[in-house]
Length: 437
Image 1: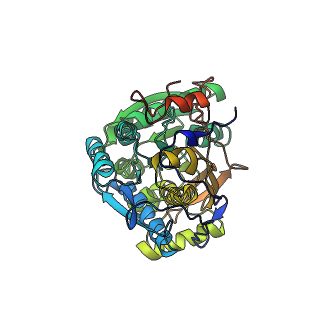
Image 2 (image 1 turned 120 degrees about the vertical axis):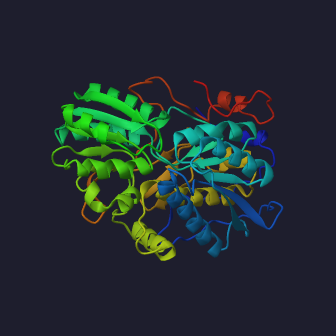
Image 3 (image 1 turned 90 degrees about the vertical axis):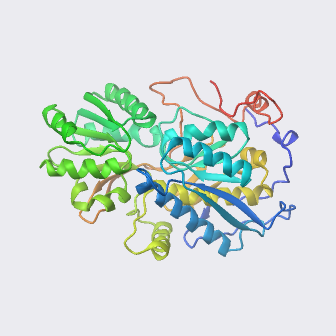
């Protein structure tokens, strides 16, 4: 279906100039084709940064915060956007869902930021989405998640299941020869929905799950769980634990004398960041599925890792979710430059869809129809240096499908559909940003 001309109802949209598709981040250039649309009032462009710097999720969220600040610093050093500097407005939601909601309101209504780069857990994202939809704000969300969601006001730059689980689960079954899964996760929406998707994949590919259990966020005592795992007859542990839980679980798993060659932990969420906190010996041999690892061999990634370490310290590591946080900052800057305005609707409907660049993981692009991101898929095995050896990689980037085919075979979302666009006009008092399919 052809795109509708959305400029007829975008308020305050400026003319669209040539974009910067395919930009490389090797030297963090900012080589946009400039337009001369009238800049917004003010000397800076405010960008909200909404990641936990304290609490149980800070172990990973701080790296997202750091990556976004690095990108903003690089962009400003190259002259900023539309001749203006990006001004980060930083809030710490303290790993607490309600505080995420409160801080999102503050950033939109008091600070009047152009967009917010933020959240990590699905619980925090779902807490703030109603705020962004009610006030027509713009959120860029960098974390892998369970999908089954399309919101006009959110652009998703992390992996969805078809970019992470669809290859990982059959690879575990067919390459590792492990068919009996023990599912353990944190007690909130992402682990539960992810495990529902994993169970569908197990049924399709001839695997099975022997148990499924969840621990409250912040819970870090797993001796009972590990005893049950050891007695279950499983041959692989599939973990969707998050934050401090990851560090505690891997340490205690090893303390029980269980090694990866006997019973591997496979996960779509453990990164180099958690391994740095737990010690490489505790993760050795276990597997993670992600679009990016620090060990990716490319000029763009080598440059990115060097710049990150130069700013934050040689002992720091990079990881998949912070890589998405980093490149989404550039995608936002490109979108503002391309649209020639900070108007929210102009960015949502014209600026961000279709934006692409060469990120540390490889080329990435925001899908024009569903506001998710084309990404690569990789499987890594943790080594003695606390890094991942890539043992499998997709042949090309993968288009995001936010509705898992095995569970929702006839669902999709399309923000280029004229009927959808009409329902999302900002002057409609009954407008909701989320598509109800």
